[in-house]
Length: 596
Image (cartoon, rainbow, N blue to C red; front, side):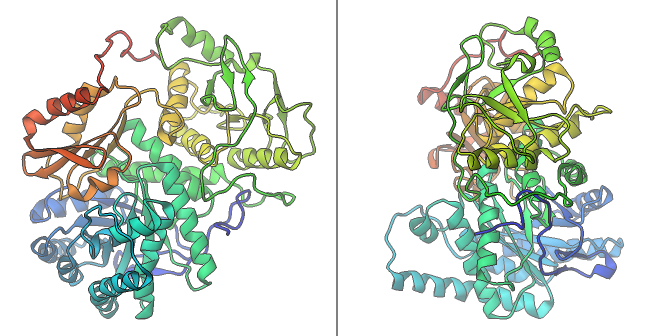
């Protein structure tokens, strides 16, 4: 299977065009040769017309091209008429997407008023009970017939009204039927979406796009690659556009890093026609990150490279860390094999940060680049390596984008029958002039995160960020975001919408303040039942809005505490973590950040 023209040379995937609204009056065309479209979602109550209009106008002002609004019931969907009318009266013609979960009748109402209907196949026609049962082939076909009966009327209505559709599956919100046959896997996500697409195609409706979202960037990358490969195998007319996003990425640097890894790596492979950076922040902040991320892709790719054919060294559809021997670095620190991926720094960074390192600090340099016994090679040329225990990297100033260079290095080593450990660099040379911190963060996250998601890399060196303390911390943050190491609490937080039953930004900040010292613990903060329990798939603990002012607490996917008053819920979450043996008191000295 193949998911892109070449993993070594940039070529954007060619798709059919999907018409979203009236392109002559503010609508957009998704796919084809058109630029990647930037999306976001408002966060207010859909019944509050004035707030919805204002938030939409605020997004359009900063460059948002498609705005999503939740429609959780038919009543909410009906108010989209008033929201859209008010926007058009103010000469705002941005396409509006109705976000539908669980309620086909809400979709049938919303399609009257908006340009796009987003459906999640796992929620649209199924009520999840997390039941385990075996389906015979006949029973499975009966289920598909039931789904078609519920979904086909919406397809017909979209076709009749000239609407577009997004078929969007989310990791953790698959139907019981899909879960029992395929598991909570990338394949299950893809097959769930394709089932709905076949219903649309059977009615000659093609004005739709796909999305495959997960809070885990590695899972998200695998899903999209598999989706594109499956579509290519199905035939040339399955060339539908795709929308990229890492769902529940969180806020601050962590949210930006996760989004850059997932979205950026796929954009560098030529995939993606629309994007959303989902942050637990004010929605306009998402568009700023979209703009920066899209602007950086040309500098991280090259469509003019001439490379000799070489076989890819990894399976792009299933993450497996590249196997290497273990080698000694220094001070009893080992690299490769089953060792953690190590964070290497330059001598200048070491000199700046080492006096501030305390004995129990988790964030610390694990090697000095200038002191390493390392072989630097140009992977485009023939090279030889004396033994498998020689640490290898790409030489500085090789005029090849870093992702391509290190994929090529791994492939060339495999061709030679070698499995040497590899030190990753986020850029071919130190940038000049210096990058701003926000751009350095995005570039490094895309490059290092993409390669780690491919299973390549045993150590990493950050040079895009020139601040010593910041570059060290960025290396660890990328490892945490991609799931390769854990040095702090991991948070999965949805970005808020009209369904949210509490202030996500405020509550997430409170939970972070109480729990940020819990290394290795993953906590999900979900505004409503749509994003929990299913979509917080691999979290240890969940804080989920159950009703206005009431919180449900989860251990994994299992609800264990119900209807807790919101003003008590954070401390009850702490109690729950303590009950399960994962609580420890914060060490105030160790909670201090490294100074820059």
